[in-house]
Length: 350
Image 1 (cartoon, helix red, strand yellow):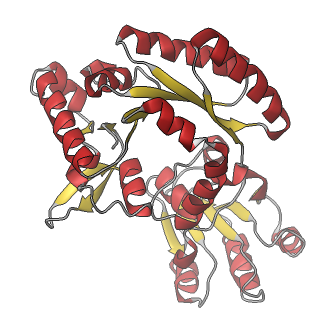
Image 2: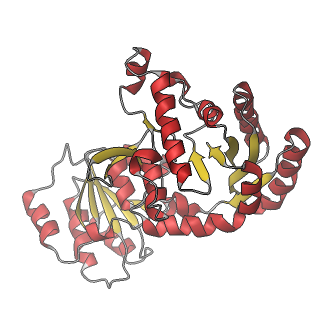
Image 3: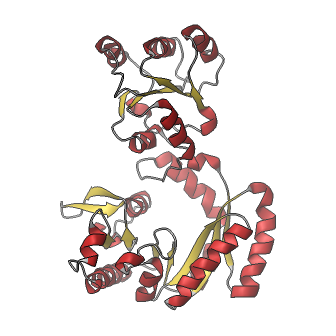
């Protein structure tokens, strides 16, 4: 269960009704086949736009939120051995509507598993702040999972952070997960969502193909130089060019027809809101068989490059490949027997 959600997806529930449900809750339910849990229960409180104002105006009450959470909790526990509640952000997120992670954990009498990104000093600082908020509402800490640990510092973090947790808090280090950059690489589908008003005009069957920042390349050369580099570049490269460069787009498309199925290049065309692609060029893109992915983005080039470099995509249930990789990567690094031993019936993980 994700007690309090923010970013949602429309789903069709078991009775054929459309509901809005937090996308992380949908991911877990769909991927793990949790068919015994109803959609209405996996995300009992959803905070869309305007919810905070409605709460402060008294249109939504604290008792309503508690009732929805309690009802969902009891329904799920009727048919489940363990209930894991996923939090939203740090422990204080949701406090403006009096439904922070720590408050929800206290209502459900759940112990808390704190999750923090890897390191020592900064990680401990964040853990301390979250623990203070848990203490305020009487929430016990069951343990800590450290995420995205630099592989070279894995043993160091395990030794020192694990020791500090035991000596100062008396809680175990339940998991220590080394960083795997691939899990933070956006798919073309993620970039579609990132850039509002974008349009994937070709290569839609490759929507779930991922690209690293290292595979991103800005094109600002002549067509001749671009084509020469294109034939030397890695087969998986994400090119970015401005919509005024019809020559670059056409050269990219023509080159794609010479390559085999192993060629996995894609192109983002920027600034099309100010420089519309000509009808003739669009006709070529749309009529070309096995065309590579071409994503049209209204933003200007410098902003697109900056946004991609800053972007860390979230997992989504449609990206089955990356979700499966994440599960296989995390599973061996978390002590599930210790987690279940420590948390009793339920835990919430912000």
